[in-house]
Length: 197
Image (cartoon, rainbow, N blue to C red; front, side, top):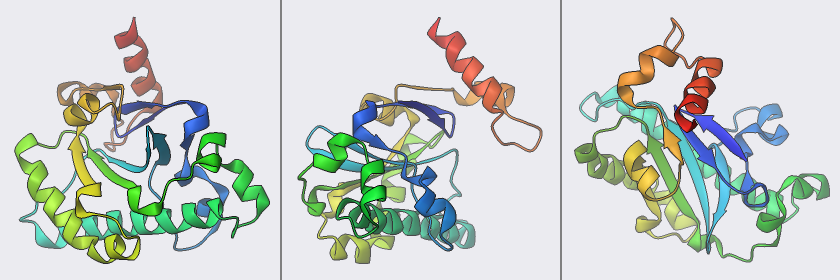
């Protein structure tokens, strides 16, 4: 399965990835937020959220709103995925999971939390990682995770770690955006198609 989020292209085997953000349980429930996907990567289950930017840490109000939103997405996704996998949400929801996630016997403490921010400066990643880990302290404790399971990447480090397969460079972003600044899906896919050829 290939999909594009925040100007980055993801590619995983169909049997390994669940687009939790697009599941009907998220679309029809009020107040539930979800990350992009849950994916089996070697011996781990990774929850991935992609963003096209983030506010600077020194803009405290905007940054706290941003980091709080990310925390809710991961917390809600962990709970929802656990409920689907354990059939709390019923057989039909369980069967929407791809086969390898259905069958994976991975303890929740081995889950990985990955935030990928396109265009984020490399030297800002540590500060953002620390802020996210602090914000998610209660979630990490509840799910018996380790702090080190929570990581923040930019597009370059995500590519190096095989979380994405391609990205649109920051200098090319104006050519694939609409007037309102949002992605023009047709232009984005055309950019990736052209880059592939």
